[in-house]
Amino acid sequence: MPLTLGLRPVGALGWRPALLSREVATAVSAQVAIVLARSMAIEASARMEAAREGERLRTALIDSLTHELRTPLTSIRAAATTLLEAKGLDEATRVDLAKIVDEEAARLDLLIGESVEMAEIDAHVVKVQLAPQHPRALLEQAVEETRKALAKHRVNIEVEGEDEPAWFDPHLLGRVLRHLLENAASYTPAGSRISLSSHRDGNRLEFCVTDNGRGSMRWICR
Image 1: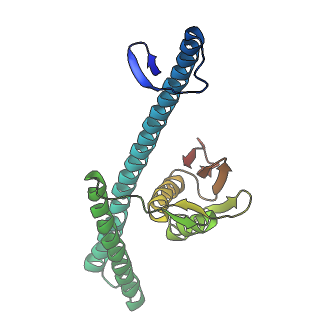
Image 2: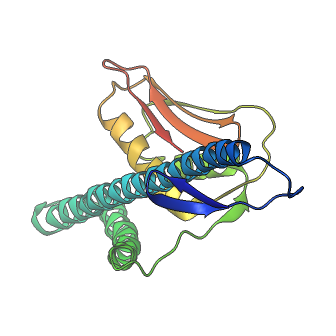
Image 3: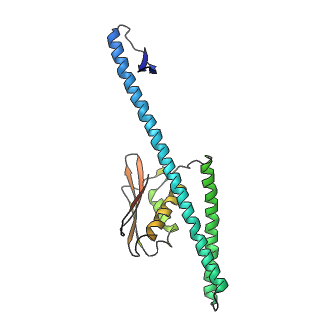
């Protein structure tokens, strides 16, 4: 028996035994059609939500990359200008400035590679590389990679429950977390606390970055 919702067919239904009144068959078919239509609507809504989450992550990644590109350039220019213009620098200071240029140039090279990845994402040729990872390892790595920005802050890491592996891309999520940590360090007073945490909500894993400065903010990566 065809299943229709209004004038739109949504499937077909077959059953046993064969003896079934026309009225009952029509009523059952109508109810099944409603259930099917509702299920398809929920599935379409889930796909739209996934697309919105993907776009939100993509935007956050691009913003993060733009922010990170400016940081090493500023450090390189400041160190190079000091080396060129300052007089009477001792050898130790010159070595320190040269190290800054070298380290920040290496970081800039890494970011350029990441910008290529962003272009590939725009071209829809890059996929999220999921792998089983420990949440605490991701948070600790993000803190380590932003240790300079966080030097004047108190950092706290908290993993709710067992630190069991979860499937996510540590490279992409780590970039977002670094961006959020640098923002928190820039816009909160020295000595204030910045917290990173992971929380499991059913089959969803949330990573949070919070601070307790003026205008405290809470950022969540799902």
